Image (cartoon, rainbow, N blue to C red; front, side):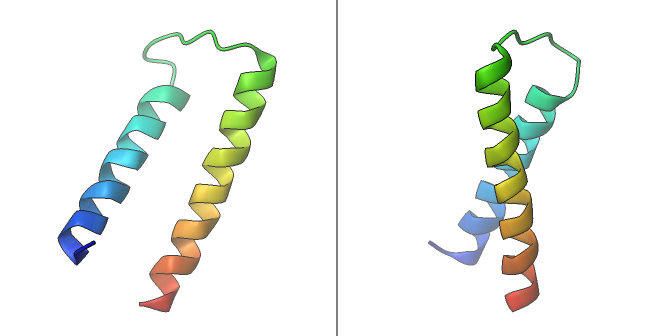
Length: 55
């Protein structure tokens, strides 16, 4: 994947994440699914921090 594609991937990933997490639209997923989303979101956040430090 090229550098531009990676930047676009992270941009759209964080944009979708912001739309899901922020209360602009109510998304009723249930407690279990929200817990899974929270864990995945936090892993992506920590992973993106480490990936940006490697550059």
